Every structure is written in C-alpha cells, then in structure tokens.
Length: 91
Image 1 (tube, helix red, strand yellow):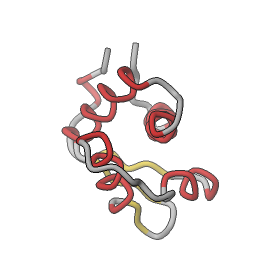
Image 2 (cartoon, one colour):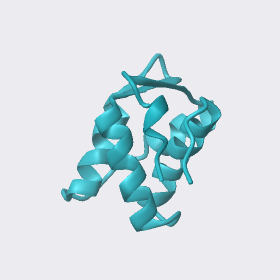
Image 3 (cartoon, rainbow, N blue to C red):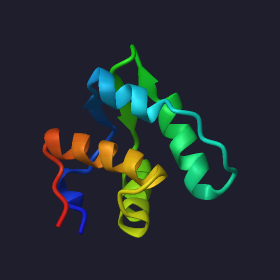
Image 4 (cartoon, rainbow, N blue to C red):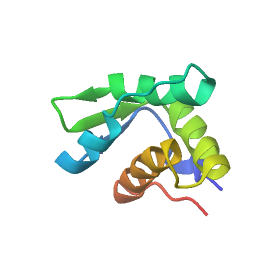
C-alpha cells in the first residue's frame, strides 16, 4: 500500500547513471504501460533527476505491482526503489 501521507506535491528522485541508462532504453509498445514509461523518460532532467507528480507515482506503483520485475516492469522497480530512497514508503 502506498503511504499517501508523504505524497504531497511532486516527487523528485536522484537517479544513478546506471538507473538513467536503464530507464532511457527505448520503449516499443503503444499501451498504457508503455506510455507511462515514455512519460517517465521525458521527466528525467540533467541526466539524473526524475520529477513525478503524485498521480504518476500512484500509477507507477499500481503497474509495478501488476507487472513484477521482468522486462518493462523492472524499469518501474528502479523508480520504486528511488522513491523508497527518498523516504516514500510502500507496504
């Protein structure tokens, strides 16, 4: 479960160079999941900062639960791990 108490305003994540490389890999599909990943790619600034709205965080959380850690779901796990590093909790 997402801790909504800490989900006010945009979430800013500091990504490692390795995380940015993985997140920036091309996304081929056109489904909602693929669009979410593409949108996240466009929100990476200065090659290390990812800014997400609370709505996007909620969608990423739901997709990460649904898709696991394989393939595209693994990219969402990177974002989830970054959110945890920034103090957002999931249970």
